[in-house]
Length: 278
Length: 190
Image (cartoon, rainbow over the protein chains, first blue to last red):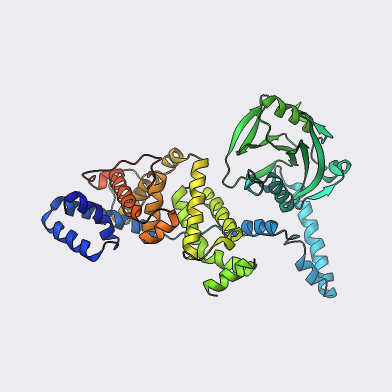
């Protein structure tokens, strides 16, 4: 074997992946070839450095598993992990229920006082990856999953303002471009209220979401970039032909999910749903 | 709980089995993703995506490979998608700060060397980085690496050789470059 062939075998030799016969031939060659022996030393030294670096312990962050549980729960269509089972079990035991209710009211009052005193923006998060994952394959399914994840409940359009009293938004019967309103939903982002509405034009969906300006939004593997709509600054995430656009004012984050690419039409839609956009 | 018990429980969507599977594999997968991305937030997001996909697609796992190999494959694919969406190679180069070339002794020298080698790994093209991480950090043999990367087994040895030579060249100062360095562009595949 010549040096070129030997060198291709040095890595597998060090990794214990070389057949015994080829390993013996390599060892014989190394006894007589300083250049190939040098390559062996370099690879051996590199392997040691890599293994030393690999020895440092790494632990998965604790916040990841609860997020996975929530997504799996939404995916299975559970009515709500936190909503049901614990309370049902508790109310089978009346004394415990009474004591727990008193404790709950006390804690809830304290939390409400604290929340009212807290500075804005609210310390909650919206995980948009629930919406964006699988969006290109099935937009209606992705929207339903997102609504379910945030306890979406269909409400009458006239109830929308009362469902999220701190938010400023409009939900006209028809949006520019001919998108007609199909349904309106109340959402819950932790302790905060939000509203969503589905629109459609000849089978093409368009969805708007409104929530308080939040400290954190999560996009999962999707990339958010800054954009401008009619000169106003916003954020954009693209998934295939779909765009999720955000325009945030001091009271409300207005989100538009659609296939609309025309900036003038995007601007007209934002003007229709966001009073301060005009 | 055996792996078969966990698998059966996960297929029945039992939360306890899902939690156990996650507990057994999450540290290893996070470690791989962290070293792949060099960004803790990205690695945590990809860890979440990996396990959501694992649990949602478990009925597709046929047992042709080990469960661990299958999970590694999903994680690597998530990382590849991540890099396709976010062309972050340049950002990684900025994030990885090599220690200053001052005189070092003892533990300082060892820590600096680890930093140097991780900085060098971060500079590898995506596929070469995957090969190095799976071989030296996850200790997979060539057959399992081929399964994880969905490549012919014969290409693993040559891909690793290319990755090693690139690393030797990048590390440069501490080690003499190999006589014949194979250049691999960012788009090159195994």
